[in-house]
Every structure is written in C-alpha cells, then in structure tokens.
Length: 168
Length: 454
Image (cartoon, rainbow over all chains, first blue to last red; front, side):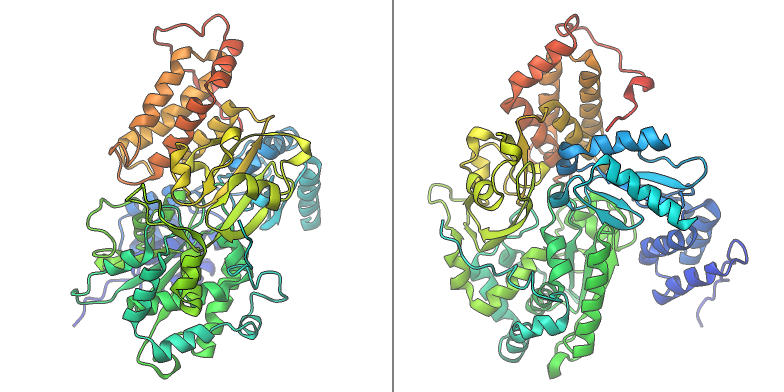
C-alpha cells in the first residue's frame, strides 16, 4: 500500500494550471523537475508570484524556501510582472565595447527605464543580458525573441516602436 | 601555418544543414553505424585517449582520461551530461554547431555515450539559445525516428535516451558540478571535489560532463582515426612535462573590433595575429589594436605586442593568461578605455558569482565597487594595489574557492592592471587630481553614486 498524499489545489480555477500540472506529472512530480516547471509557469503567466511558487512547492513536495531559492538564483525567472514586450540588451564584452552603452542610453531617454525595469504602463521591459552568444553581431539585442545584430540606437528604437505598434 | 579544410564546420553553409536528410547526404551517422556494429566501447575509449583530445569547454582536461576515471564497480546507471551552457562572453562556437549542424553534435554525443556506456544523456542547453533549442529538439526527434536513439539501437544491445534540458540564465551552470546541481533542480552551486563527477555526479551516480565541441571532435576521431587528429595542432612542449599537447581542429570565435567577426575553424595553435589578420580581415576602420582577449574574458588579456601568442592550451600561459579558455577572441581597438573594460568585466563576475564562497562573492562585488568609485572620479593610487590583492587571492589557484569562476574573475583584473598600469594611473590622476594620493580610508559611495550605469 502506498501513501497517497492529497494533491494540492491550484491557487485559482485558471485553466492554465492544468498545463502546469501536465508538466509536473510528466516527470512524476520529481523534485528535479522544479526548473522546468517554473519555466512553464513563467511561460504561461509571465512571472512567478507567491501563490504560484507555493503551489509548485506543495506539488513537488519541496519547501517553499527551496522554490524561492531557485526562482531568485536564476536570472531568467522574474517575481514581478513583465511588460508586454521585452528588449534584452546584451552587455557582454564584445557588445559593450561596440556600443551597448549607447543602446541603453537610447532606451532610457525614450522610455525612461533602466535595464531591469518595466515601463509603468507595462508595455516594455528592458533586460540586461550578460552575453547572449551573438558576439559576432555586436552590439546585439533581442526584441520579443528576435535577435538583432549590428544595431544602432535608431534601429533598436524603431524596432521596439514597431512591435508595440503592431500589437495594438 | 598550413591551412586545412574545415572539419567541424564542413556542413555549415549547406542548405538545410540542420536536418537529418542533409546531414546523412553528407555521410552523417555512417560512423555511428560502423562503430556500433564493429567496435567495442573500450576500443572507442582507447581511440579517444590515443588522439590526445582535450576538453574544449575551457579547462582543456584530456577527455580520454576523464572517461577512464568513471567508477566501473558501482551499481546503477552512468550518466552523460552534454554541457551546452555556453555563456563565456566572447564565445559562440557551440551555438553555431547546434544551430547549423545539430546532428554532428548528436552523433558525437551518441559515440561518447557508447564509449562510456552511459544509458541516459542530458543535453544541458542555455536558455538564451532559442533557435538552437528548436533545432536540437527536432534533431533528437529525428534520431529517435531513425532508430539511432532509444532501445536496442540499430539492432544492437545498446540503449540510450537523450533528454534536452534548458537552463535558466546562470553562468555558473557551465561549471560541471554546477550543471549537475542545476539538472537536479537546485541552485547551481558547484560541489566540493572530490568526489569528482566520474565517481559521484548526477543523482549520486558516475557522470561524465563534456562540452559540445568536444563530442563533435569525438565524432571525427572515430571517423578519421587518432593519427589524423594528432596530425593537426601542436605537439607537447618537451620543456614542460605537464603539457600534453594541443591536437586537433578548433573553432575560434572572433569578435570585437575586427573587420569580419565570426566563427572560424583552424588547427589548434594558430597565432593570434594570423587569426586577426587573415581570418578577421584586420582591426576595423583602419585602427590599431590595443589588446585582445584570447579565450573568453576569464582568460585575461594579451597586449598588442603579445599578439604572436599561439592559441593553444600552453602558449597563453606564457603570457600570463589563464589559458586558452573557450578560444573566444575579442579584439579591443585603441579607443577602448581599459578602465571601462575592466568595469564591465567585474560587473559580469559580480553578477554571476553564485555566492557560495565568501572570497568570490565578496571579492567580485568589492572589485566592482572600487571600479565604480574610480569611474565616479574618486579613485586613489592604492586602489590598484587593492584590486591586485583581490585578484591574487581569488580562486582555485590560490586555493580559496570551490570552482574556477573566481579565477576567471581575477585574471582580467590582474592582466588589465599589470599590463596597462599607466593607463589606470593616468585615469585616476586625471579624474581625481586633488585626492588620488589620499591613503586614509574613504567612505563608500552612497547609493546615489552607485547607481549602475552600463
């Protein structure tokens, strides 16, 4: 006879929790599936809040502290809501010496945000990356998942303008 | 040095080079079929040992020797982890391989798993490579469909499963035990060694961790033999008993201020100036080079008068660099401020230190704060000595940390200040003319001044 633990209930009746449960079930609710599960939650909800981390912790049989520890250790996980669009600016060595600073300055001047911040209207998040492995294309940025290389400030701002405009 | 035809990049540039059809049309998986039918795992291991292949991930440890450490007497499975968490600034050769020729990587992985008798392989890919993720995922599915993976592969008694695992943005996951911890779903805190992963690694089982380019080399060693592999590169230096030679082809990533940045293949040991002039088209905009990073920022700096350095596992050490690293060469032209460069480098390591060992956590953070202060016009002469003291006491080599991240943080500090001391002194004197000779303790900057500017 095996001990059947009660399955924790999702934080609310949002349908997306079912998909999170699928991810956890696929690995047999093993604790080593934590990172993949957090990827899933963030992919579906955009960020990790406390109810979400609590749910994942209880489902995988981990203390909340462990889940919180992992969520804060890896740079990709965000505990705050992110903007609808993301602009990742690479600040690796090659990009840095070829003008990443100008890109960051341009972003600050136009949108008033530093790397790691989101505009108050939740339209755009600026993220600093330590090296995205596109050194041959320096300076590089990633706007909504698309890698842009050999960038000037004007090109970057035009691209951001376009993705925001196209979505509205 | 005589040029040789590309081997690792042979398929790159062909149409649809990422598909199995294109890879097999170019002779792909023939080696895997042949080895599986005719060679024993021990024979493959011996072949790799005889080839003198050294790990391409940065440390240059002999691959055959690493495999031979695997504990054979332990019950339970052996795991193989493929380290595709390429995040050293200046490095992108693994991305090129995974995006444009993922089947070559997989064939190398299959052969390496067979040689080590691993039944499960984890492909640890960094999250920042979405295209590589899609291509490798598709390539693994194609391999299962073709029967190259799964149970009783091609009718043999050998079975292998490959799982693709994405990281979540942490440089430290490239350290082999950090990678193992991360695969177990934990913070990527490197483990104290021994026990080495070959004895007790993933899920406390014997584990091998190899780099993407290393397993790609294994494929070509199995195909062309160890004598071919040893015909490329540089033999061991007889004067240095610890050097086991630098054999085989290597992917060099060239970026920074060169006319044609990119990923180039050459036999190990190509001199840096030849790489920059012949492959990179020289320094851009007709300028002169000031310095170059030989193999990712962790390896330190070469001054422009040291560009005759051969890029192999031994030569950069003679110039005070940490080693060949990942062979990610970044060229800095005469307009780059070394103070800014070092600040950027320190910011990277302060951000990426995992926080486990105090010398690294505090050392990288304080080096950054000192450089912040220097750039805010409050630098002092003695700051240079202070930075060097931090640099000299950080890392595995002085014996103060668990892993090599701190050595990587220390080398740019040591090289930049020792090789460009004049520039640092001039910067400090010019930016803080009234106070640069102060020796009494200065107050740390308040938060207003510490606001990080990129």
